[in-house]
Amino acid sequence: MDMIAQMPLPASVLLFCVAAAAVWWAGGRLSIDVAGFADRVGMSQGFAGMLLLGGITSLPEIATAGSAALTGSPDLAVSNLLGTASINVLLLVVADLLVAGAALTALSRSSSPILQGVLGMVLMTGVAGLAILGDQEMFGLGVGYGTTGLMIGCAGALWLASRYERAPGWTVADDDGSGREETEDEGPGRRIGALVAGIVLSATVILVAGFVLSQTGDGIATASGIGTGMVGLVLVGLATSLPELSSIRTALRIKRFDLAIGDVMGTNLFNIAILFVVDLAYRKGPALGEAGRFEALAALLAVAVMGLFLAGLLARRRDALLRLGPASWAILATYAAGLFVLSRIGAG
Image (cartoon, rainbow, N blue to C red):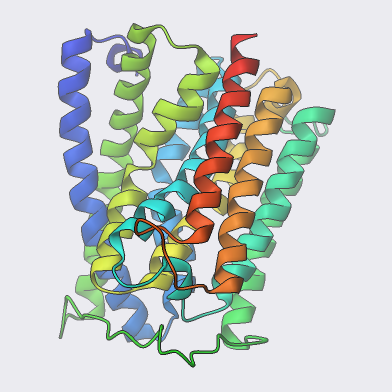
């Protein structure tokens, strides 16, 4: 692991590009296989995106955050996870650019992504609170009360989302026909076994190549002299978000809009749960016990941009300026302001 991060800059850039290409291919195939699997087992696209796409595209974060914690850098592990949460929402802004004819927030067919997002916001607010107040070790086990509670909360959120899929409290009105686009089936006639095998293959590639991607990204950032906190927030966050970008792009191409949105909401939920893994790997005490206002503000930035996207889902405005809907513009402005504040804190 150290060998990858300490490679010469040209070698790091080359390996970064190779890993990025592998992750891009795997993320695209994963969306197609998950969409086909969901159709064949009767799972909604939103929940499939949250559970399967979100869980699998979070695999690089497990390896990256765990590695950082093992090497005694819990601040890098936490800032990586929190930075990725905000960047994932920015990927939905990129998706907005790729959608023709209407804002992405007007094309969702289900209310389930709203529930998923709200649950994620509640838990992320808890992360911010723990970063400010600190976390305490639980019974000498090396894990914090707070991160254990967050892990339980994430499991509860998945359970609530699953229940909601079976009996949604309300549905999205579709009077303007915005949600009636025909989806494309990329794998007609494929058996469930073949789809599962494809999902496992893509997951393996994403785990291995995604970890290499994040490690080389860290090495590139170290060679450039950027501070550790901002490395985790921006560069490593971008690297570990590449599987989501690839899977979102493919989901949009086959017109599975809720699959793309569910991917982001699910990934952010799993990233919160990974904080428990960081505690397990970092044996000097709860990782959030060493967090501070930088990590707290990074978590609140994630809450803010998620909230703005959910507001867009509720408003469902189709109008766009320069191919971006109102929610996307608000997210960009908020993220830019948040990044400026975080850079000032990191520099201080």
